[in-house]
Image (cartoon, rainbow, N blue to C red):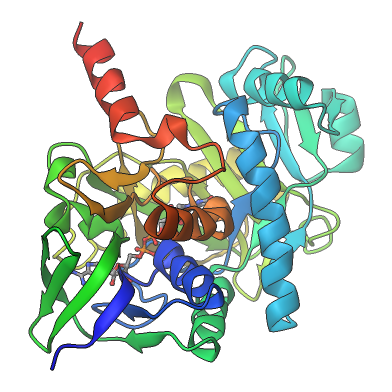
Length: 385
Ligand SMILES: Cc1cc2nc3c(=O)[nH]c(=O)nc-3n(C[C@H](O)[C@H](O)[C@H](O)COP(=O)(O)OP(=O)(O)OC[C@H]3O[C@@H](n4cnc5c(N)ncnc54)[C@H](O)[C@@H]3O)c2cc1C
């Protein structure tokens, strides 16, 4: 006999692991299914660290969600009795009119967020690892820091299991068929019935959500770690996490020397190379390392010792580079969680809550209007006209 669930969660990466934990905590009968194991190397949720910041340059409308995300991260830590979120501050560097600097200041001003604006000399005095050009300034977000992605994913799965969630790993879902009463979910190992399903399959999202086939594009992302030349100025506490606006060259991000591999840097969206999610990640090549070696040597010379490690990961981009968190147009029994265009991890703790709301209540009190299929259509129509 097929077991009947209230909610099934397909994909147990960042968004799915949080969703399954929020659902199990609400006492519903939930199953989570993942094709691989937690925080595996083909997912978008591995690699030691993810930035979190409150003064969001991308759009001030993200800030209320971030405030909720911070609360939920602290609740996760209390539940696990371990640290997931470390506050180091995030320094956002660029020309005064650059997108990152001006956007961060606008976001902080609109929401009354604490921040400091530092000129080149003050930045050099307080954070000597960073080299600023004459015309550049920095905005310090004192509430910024980093998250530990593997601890978060494993932690949400642990809490979900403790609250009675059924979790299957190494099982690939091959189809989701909605009907009036719910959905039928099939894999090579079994068939499941559920009232609702949340699809949170990261870079594979388009395979199970046909509405995203034209729009969700997995791209290659590369990050590298460097043994610092000066181990003093790159310690967390002396070096904040950072974002750096390089104008036409895009933006870079980085972390202090958190672990044995040292200082980590990457360029947001790297070379924007589309990849096939069903193939292994293309290996790191000389062009990748030349880009990141050049950046760290130029902008953080005290950190630019031996490159200890470099790896490939995946972003999955939507056209607007926003999120999509909504019921599927084809069936209100299907909830879609996009992989969030390369900036979603920090929101995982609030996205889990939102996905549980969408599955159980059909909507959420949290402000997600900008992340609907309608909003995506409006964006595409605006771009076409
Ligand atoms: C290098 C890198 C750096 C980043 N830096 C930041 C940052 O600093 N700050 C930030 O906020 N965000 C950052 N991001 C983005 C963030 O990490 C992602 O938005 C987030 O991890 C996406 O999570 P997800 O749950 O959607 O996807 P994933 O974690 O990839 O999870 C998807 C899961 O679905 C499973 N799956 C797929 N298909 C099926 C199927 N058919 N059946 C069953 N299971 C399936 C997969 O096995 C996988 O486990 C970064 C991303 C990368 C790659």
